Length: 86
Length: 474
Image 1 (tube, rainbow over the protein chains, first blue to last red):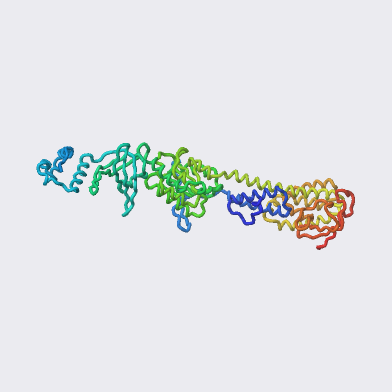
Image 2: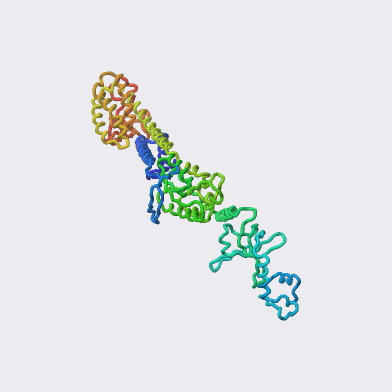
């Protein structure tokens, strides 16, 4: 798979990481890579999985209200007050 | 010019006002005094029409509709007709601005009109004061017209649709703080995916101001640089309630958005213009919530599974190596390695400190059993082959947890064809003079084969060297 070979640059979106991780597992399971190479894949896989797990950590202050968005992308927000309506 | 009976009778029906302009009783007697200018006549007719017919409702089909825009105001000219007759119409700016739909030929309408006359041309015309489509709701018509217009512009084509990200982490939401839809949406997203963050851009979702507010909220969210997508949502309601999502200003804002937009307005049966223009339409606010709140737990499991699969593969590779180590250890030659093994164990201790971070935590887990194995091996190797095999079994498990480099750190080598070729497993593949590469824990040696022969597997009791190699690179 060309996807497998392509990946020297570090993926930074969750989707890219998952894709790369899957490609690595596939590559490992093909079993054709030399030992030291498959070890490298293995280590990269562990790092990718860790990065994904970090991304999946529970977020804090999960609901914000946008008060202002400046042209330069600067954003003013405040937490959403929970309405008592339930 | 003798006034006809109709005219005179009409005139006679008028009282004071008309009588002030012309003494109708004397018209017939003194024709010279009764000659009117055309302008006067037209004015009289105009007034007559206003007084006699005034303002009425009339139904008919529009035709010859022409919009004029000049001098900063718009008006429309055209005709209203039915099978047997037609009348000129004019719609002025003040009326036009109250209509939510566009006037077009062929449209059946019911209109409240002032019947009047355009004196300069002597033409009778209807000045439209109110108008609504006949046989179809006004909003329905406006919806159809805008939909057709935007469709012609190509705003609905699939090629325009941006893909909605499969794993959004930051989602912008446009709706009202008080909306029931917001409550449902948050309820579902927060429960399903605790890694998800929501940024609400509050906007009214009903009433005349709502359209502009929704458009502004979409624009504002597009300035935020970390969002993955936008959800535009509102709970169910009547066509009037949902109307803001059918306004052109909202459609334009959606079309101009760089972020993918999911439109989830009303119930399943409600389609709004925003649904058509958006990159993705979901039937309800809850459905939109389920779409963006991808199941985090499932993906955690998925990642674990990928991780354990790759571990399994790497472990399998190590196990294959270990099997070869095993028969080697069963041979008598192993006894001779006792001393060497002790040295290697020292090297292993040293190497453990240098291991890649990614593997270190595994070693900590394995540390205790490793130490145990190490102690036993360095202790009493002579105690018997059986015990050695048992220990090696334990060692093998430990190694599995560690990785292939650890095997090599203990003094085993990997032989392989030059230039990173396949790993060599069988001396029969080799001939005298072949070059091979031997990978040690640190570095490699290029080696030339001087000869091959049976290995330890067949020379169970032979203490002679099985494979003779001469290292060149040392």
